[in-house]
Image (cartoon, rainbow, N blue to C red; front, side, top):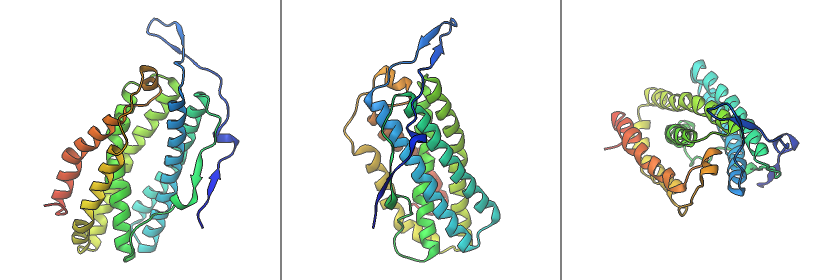
Length: 250
């Protein structure tokens, strides 16, 4: 039976206002944080923690499959990265004045792959979480970071973006390993990719356009319309050529 856990004081601790330096060297107050800033960074705590749990689950499957030690070690390192990202996001939320704990839903902490063999389930998770999710995360966090000036938020985005590049590569390396191990998985990927691609498009374009102020951009937010545009560009520049190269798209 599913449930939810509200995380403890570490993730809702209050933080003192921080001043940042202008180009002239004078101290300037951190831009005020809106409710949208607090909600978004609280959501990022939840998302990063969920990513840690799902990667842990995927790494267990790699152990069960007898995957190379390098891939298993990479997966475990990513778990640690994602936990770090959750804590960094909590620091930003606290600095923004957040007093509400993140809600961690237990049912969201495991992989939800369709019924099939362990290899097929691992392929599904690799495609959904890493080849799609972590690949688009790189340009998304690049754009979020571009106008971010609040020090605590910029430091968090610097670390997250640096790690996402490695996470993306892990996904494509894992996909290649799975298909070299079991070539029949290429045909399975052809069957499931259209729905996965459609799903990620819906995820980032379903919400109506939201406006973001200059102060909110300084805290690392961007309008929802820009998410959809980045996903579309990633489909054209990353997903399509990479999957065609592997014989998974026509």
